[in-house]
Length: 534
Image (cartoon, rainbow, N blue to C red; front, side, top):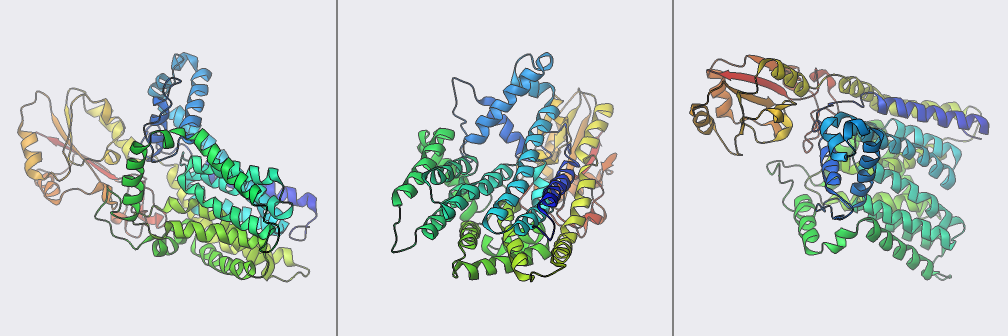
C-alpha cells in the first residue's frame, strides 16, 4: 500500500512524478546555446576532456577528480562517430563546428542522471522506511528548485547526487543482511562518488553508521567487511582518478590553493571583496532557503530533528540519513565561498528526512493518503511557482546572444572591439571571432581606456560593456561616466527591469539567472551596452 492506493497505483504515481520531473528539467534545456559560457563550468568540463588522448590521460586539472573527464571524453568520441560528416572523425572538430550540439548532448545526459536520482531516492525511501516515504521524497526532489535548475546543465553536482543516493541502496542492505557483497557494492559507489566530486568521501560516514548499526558494540563487528569496503573505495577512486594521486605535488598544490585555501581561508579568488557568513549559517539561511523553497527547507529542518531523535531510539535508517546530512553540513560549515550548488548533494536526503517525518507524523487512518498528498502539494507550491518562472526565463534569448547577433550584422570584422571588463561572462556571443580585440586588465580606469582609444587604428572602435548586480559585471565608475559623457550607447540590450530590483542571485556564481524575484528580470544575461567611438 502507498498513500492508501494499491501497489499498481504506486507504479503510476512514480511514473507521474518522473514525468513531472522530466518536464520541469527539460523545459529551457537549450538556454544560452550556441554560447559556451552562458552556464559557467560546462565549458571547462568539455575543454579538459578534449585535451585527453590515449597517450596522455592526465587531465592536468585537479580541482575535480578524473572520472568526469574520462566519461566526457568517451561521450565526445561517441558523438564524433555519430556525426562523421561534421566532425571529420574528430571530437575537437565536432566541438568547433557545432558546440551547441555537444553542449546539448551533455545536458541531456546530465538531465537523465537527475531523473535517475529522483527514481533512486524513491527506491531508497521505500527500502529504508516505507512506500509513502519513498514516493514523498521523490516528489519533493522532483520540485526542488536547485536540483531542477542544474539538472539541465552539465554540472557535476548532479551525477554526484545520483551516486550518493545510489550508495544508500547497498548500504541499506548492510543493515538487513550485512553480506560481503553489500559492503563491496557500498565501497564501489563510495569510490565512484569521490571520483566525481571529492566531497563524495563524506559517504564513508553513513557507511560507518550502517556497519555499527548492523554490528553494535559488544557483538561481532565483522571489521574485515568494513575494511574491505573502504579498501574497495580507495581502489576504485585510484582507478577512476589516478592522476589525483600520481600527479602528487602538482595536484596537492592546486587542491590546497583553490579548494582548501580558496573555500575555507581566503575566499573565492575572483571575488575577494564578497563577504558572507560562513557556510554553517549561509547555507541554511540562503542556499537551502532558495534551493529548496522555505516551506521544504523548514520541513527538512524538522525532519532532520526527527531523524536525530529516532537515531537514538534504534532507528537505523534514520541514523544513516542523519549521519550523511550532519557530516556533509559540517564539511560545508567553514566555507567562505558558498556557491549554492554545493548543497545539491544534500537535497535528496533533506527531502527524504522531510518525507519520513510526514509519514510518521500523520496517523494511519482513512483519508491519510489524501492528507499526505495535500501536505506534499502545499510544501512544493512555493518552489514550484519559481520553477515555472525559471523555466520560462531560460526559454528566452540571453542578452549576450541578442547582442552578438546585432554585432554580426552591424560591426565589420575590420573594426576594433574594446572590453573594459576583464571577465568573459559579460561579453556578447561571437566576440571571439573578431580578430581585433582589446581587453583592459583588472583595475583599469578611464585613463587606460582613453589611452587605448587614442591609439591609431584604421577601422572604427567600439566599446562594449556588460553590467549586472552580480559582482562579475562590475564596471569601474570612472569608465561609466566617461562613456556617458561621450554620448551614451548606440545600442543597448537590457535583461533587467528596474535594475533588477527584487531579484535574488547566487553572488558567487557567474550565472545571470535569478533564484527568485523574476519580476525584476526581462531576459537572462547582463545589460549589454555598445558604444561607437568616433
